[in-house]
Length: 375
Image (cartoon, rainbow, N blue to C red; front, top):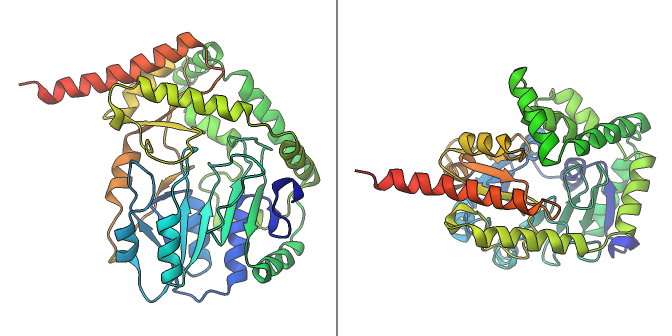
């Protein structure tokens, strides 16, 4: 934890899901208590809330900042509200100032999910948050192919979490090695030419490329049964994972992160319709993911893949939180995610592929604009 500048506030877990489950278990919340949650998040986070007998209440987000709208936080508040959980999305950060003020005034605990917002071991955890959670899964910045680091401000709660985790069995070494080999294979086909060949092969044999990739990168298989999921969740990280995570934090340098941020900003400037890019007013954007929202996401993905560019639509890694009975559904979040396409905007992308991708996205937006004004 010294490498994360967390002193006595840090805890390493198998995943953010494991840490979230530990924290809720250590809080002693009562059945029926409510968690206000930003409307787009990882679905398993909701599954864990429900497992603890709590209610997840989504709060719609502003597409420009990807932060919950303050007036909607206030509207969602009830006497049973105990926690606010916000997820920083797509490599940017939301301003927690107003949310933290709301939480303090209402005596609520504030948890920030920073799984997509790691910016270095010396910058872990906003001081206004009670808990900050960072992921080092396969697609994350400075990946260790798994693992999570939590910063927990309440030392008493942290002590209870450590006690619970100490009773868990350690994750197996064999599973980590298997995952490493799968990811190495995925890296080998991630460049435009082999990616295009793989996409054509999937179409020919009736396979789903998104499902194939997701099966490699996901630490927890989608649609896993509850008993298996929670049994998997309750493990300590394996020794190889701890060693890899320690090394990744030790050698972390901000150079590639800065290049990734610069590449993403350059792509954003080339978009002729600024509304295509959600989160354009979020803070400290490093573009871990680069989303665009279009009218026909399937057509855009198909066009990009024909050029060997591995774009994808939203998958089960994130989803809109379903509102419980009697609560307003998050309409803006649903609209945004229904049209989102994630683009492979990374520093190593060849300049020709970069230009092709910009052109295809702009052409897609231009066609929609032309159709909307056609007589």
